[in-house]
Every structure is written in C-alpha cells, then in structure tokens.
Amino acid sequence: MRIAVTGSVATDHLMTFPGRISDQLLADKLDRISLSFLVDTLEIRDGGVAANIAYGLARLGHRPLLVAAVGRDFRDYGRRLAELGVRTSAVHASETRHTARFLCTTDPDGNQLASFYAGAMAEAADIDLVDVMNRCGRADLVLIGADAPAAMLRHTRACRALEIPYAADPAQQLARLEGPEIRELTDGAHLLFTNEYEHELLLRKTGWTHTEVLRRVGTWITTLGEKGSRIERAGSPAEDVSAVPTDAVVDPTGVGDAFRAGYLAALAAGHTSVRCAQTGSVMASLALSAVGTQTYDTTPEGVRELLRTAYGADAHPLGDHGGRPEGTPAGGGAHR
Image 1 (cartoon, rainbow, N blue to C red):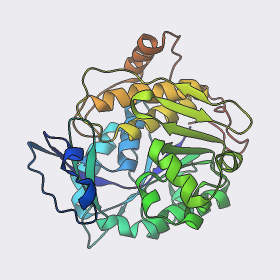
Image 2 (cartoon, helix red, strand yellow):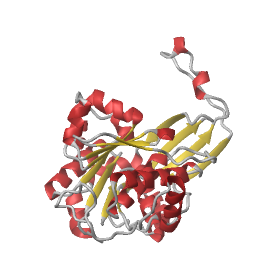
Image 3 (cartoon, rainbow, N blue to C red):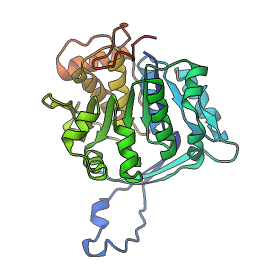
Image 4 (tube, rainbow, N blue to C red):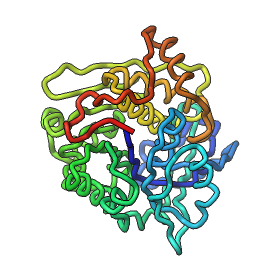
C-alpha cells in the first residue's frame, strides 16, 4: 500500500519546565498574561507532523512519500529520512525561507505551551498533488496533516479529483481554520483523526452534530491520552481501545503522530480498526518514552511483540498482504 503524507516539516526546540504551568496562571488575570519560564533543558530535534508520521511508517517497513515544503536547511534532515526509507522526491525546497520551527515547553504533568513559526511551510500551497502523483506514482491513501491551510485545502481537492482515499488530520490547524474550511477538509474523508480537545473543537467550529460528522467520514479516530483511543463509525457502536502503559513518560511531543503511523501501517496490512488503534497505541508508547519525535527506535517485529504483551492477542504481520484495508473504498486498493 502506497501512503503519501502531507503536512509540516519542522525543527523542534523542546524545553522542560520543572514547575506546573497551571500554577502560574491566575484566574483573575487571564486577560493580561505575561509569563517567562526558566527551563531546565533544551533539546533541538527534527520534527513536524508529516515528517514524524513518515518516520514512524518507515520504522514499520513502509516507504512513505513525504509531501511538504522545507527550507534549504533541510538537507541533512532530508538525507536522514531518506536513509530510513522515506521518499523525499516530492519535497518542495524554498529559496528564501527556513524550515518551520516548533518551540514547546512541557511541565511534569505533560501540559505544554507551544509556538509554531511556519517559515517555508507557507509555500506548501505551491505543491500540486496531482503533479506529484504523476511524477512519483499514485498513492493508495493520502494523509492530509496540519500544514498551510491553503495547502490542506488544495491537497483535499486533489484527492477528490483523483478519487484517492484520504485521512483528514487537521490537528493544530483547527484553531486557525474557519468552519467552512474544516467542513471541506473532513467531508468525505476515509479517516478522520483528532485528539479529545480537537474532537470538540471540530464540532463547535463546523456546526455539525456528532452524528452528522460520522455520516460524512468513514471512520473517526479520537485519541484520548492515557485513556487510549475511540473508534467511531455511523451506525455502529463506538469501540474503545486502551493505551499501552509505560513507566518511562519522557516527552509527549509527537505521540499522536506515532499513533497515526502505527494505525496506518496496520491499516495497510488489512487489519481491523481495533488492531490498527492497538498498533497506534504501541507506537505512541514508544514515542512517549523518548525525547524528540523521531528518536524512538523500533521494528515490525518489535511492535508485534509489544502488541502481544499489551493486548494478549495474536499479532499478525504489519507488512502488506495485498488485501484491501477494512473500510477502504473500492477505488483505493492496497498494494506496494
């Protein structure tokens, strides 16, 4: 199964604050916040949602196509991804801007304050996904991740024109996108990924009811942090999947991206949505135990063993078996 991943590529500046961010917020002064946090550590890592997901897929034996806009400072970053198996031929390199920057401060409770500088990502809307598919080969599934809003919309329209199933993953951009844009991005998506907060924000900004969203997407996957995830489809009961517990909670940044990589890898192998979410939870636990979003190390065999340990069920191969993933429209075959 050929998977293309669109979205941001960034350099992450990850800092840790030893106190609790919530303790610094005064309820009667929230209209005039002026805070500075003295942090204990600074880690500079490669990141960005599209690159993080592509990294996870590559760790599970896939060769995902990365579709993103970067700066000229991406050279070493891109070489590392390519060596891992990520295809970077569809990456657009800006002549004038740096690769995007993500700055995040995390406290011991996992609360975060973050800022994102778009940089070269502003040029992502210049990428023609139709041309990419012609040059690099047609994808069987496209994940449309957080990116320049115009790029997200353009990629969604291209998937519809090409009749390629796509996964809508607006993530952090839900805060910036307007209701009509979110409705266009999600209406007709094969998969919709949100976390618990984004789940409610999407409902509020689209004006759709929960039932209306389910009627418009194939499967809605909501990650719930330490509670795991929930899988929902129109006309079917919701399915809850527990998280994989870990004693080594190091850094929550990129955990959701690792979940998505695991989910898509299992989907490509033709597994049920529950097994897909379980695989996502295993990958999320690995990311949670490492500083940085692309520093955890695993193999398909390692993930299968963790699946057996966590869920006590037979873990089937994560490689493609040539079948069609559960719920994939007939036009979206699964093959390499």
